[in-house]
Image (cartoon, rainbow, N blue to C red; front, side, top):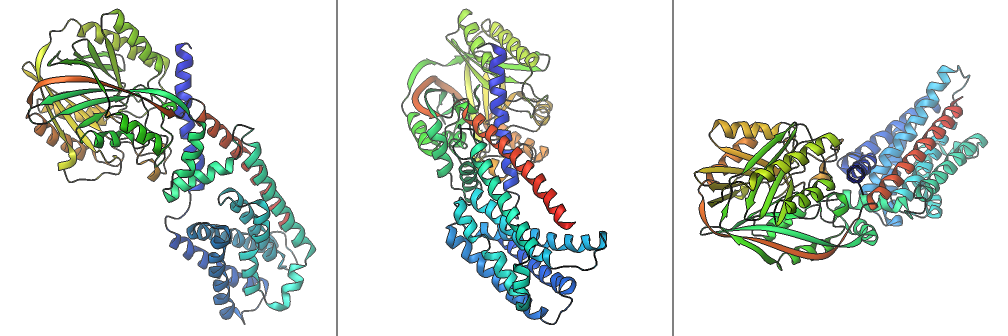
Length: 588
């Protein structure tokens, strides 16, 4: 595959995750608490009853009695729905809030239409129509979100709206309102539209590649709202493929404390709490909280799909082989080519390259850079070239020109490193576990710094357990370090997806610096730098390698989900237009 196609594959993988999040953000647009939804549904029910009595029934004689009875019917059926469907009470409450709002809108539109079209009399047909429209809404929600069979949805779709209807509508009007031919015709059409939508969006959207779009929706919501990843992990692991995954560690052994750089050939994701979304922190804790877990050149095709695969991978880190030893390194080399910047360190015949486009923005670095640099390194006499994607600026997919600049900067770095003298080194390390702060744009590993004392100079490498960084934050940190006489190499993020579930923005996550203030971030790293510069001589470093066979999600799984959801969304938009058009027709 040529470089442009490889770049396209990685771009599509990232875009697929963004589109999935974007589609499902719509399904999670609910109040943060079911108590809020309960209050909304009760308030709306009260308005429905009041408006019906004042504008439709032209009497308020039984209004004070009708309101509490209707609230009783509403709350009672809110308990019945989850028992029948075996679902969470909170989902029933959220559905009730939206459904009653739909009913109220229908009643108000009926009143508005009587004024706009100068109707001689306001007929209660709109109360019945609103009840049946609410029933069709319940059919759609029952089948898509709650996983009910279509037959079951039809049987119980009227449970709540009809109970409320009978609670507040005077009994003398029941028969006339429930047998109105036009109301029944409208209601049946609404329910048929809801049923057709659920069939088409569930089956046709997948086009044979995804057996049920709704099953994927239900699994996603179970993970997103209930912190239950099992249904989603089952779907994803079933489609995953076995792959041999390598992990490299540079273990620095000192008198005081060992620390290490870790470069796994995995990608964090796809989204918390599913699979390997929190894999950087799990590696960090497994390695005594003294590891800086880097983002390798990888994309979402290398996601671990389930907790079982994560455990298999973490266990494999205990079994590794030492492939190189030493106690010296070169001083770091940094090369800038246009927007691209590469920082390199050389340990004997192993080079570590850190690539960045900050502050201009970047996404996952394309694979062809890795393959070309590995081959270039071999041609120049290196045993191996380990590449880190710093992932420290927000941006769209990397353009070909910028990717080629990264490649050229990295090659120039390798050319320079091999000419440098190797010197004894000392290492200092500090993590934030001793600092008392919390940040919602950081994963549980928070931040750390490693200090390399090589020859007579100290160099600082920073790390954050975060999903990318706010543009320019890296430069603010670097400038502050420079002003205080510190040689700042780079800051890398782990690209953790741990906090993605809490974000409802266009990115689907909070990048580092979007919530944390720059001054606070700088103070954290400066405090750690002062601790880390208390270095210790390295008795030795070891380059460790471990390999294990695990299941990874592969290149097309997220694409299948994304395209199916896109199709389902187009079907939904079409049905919304049809339903809205028919609703407007009923007002005429």
